[in-house]
Amino acid sequence: METPLTRRVLEDHDAVIEASKLLPVLKAVRRGDFSARLPENWTGLSGKVADTFNELVEMNARLAAELARVSVAVGQHGKIDERASLGGTVAGTWKDE
Image 1 (cartoon, rainbow, N blue to C red):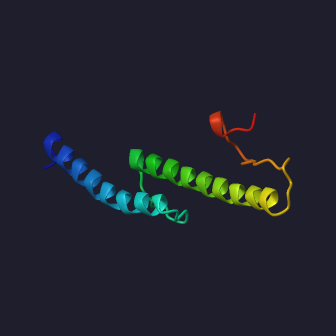
Image 2 (cartoon, rainbow, N blue to C red; image 1 turned 90 degrees about the vertical axis):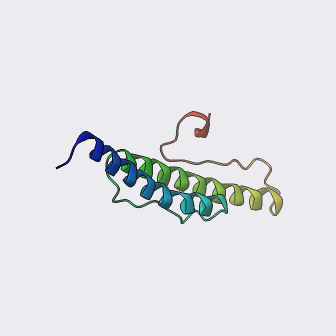
């Protein structure tokens, strides 16, 4: 029989399991491994966190690639008017003004 207390214990257990999966992925991204992703099959709040995290990693990968492109354009080809662009649907500070 499931009670509010047992349901809470199960939810806490699930959160610990998901956090244990989150940490290695966070560390991989910190090392520059932008292929690291959280599982796409998580549901509920964990699923929203995973989706948002994966989107952020993808944005960081695009930013790193774009900075590398601009670095080559400016450093090797002398194109000092070259600008970085993330394109897509970005907002806030990410957005080109």
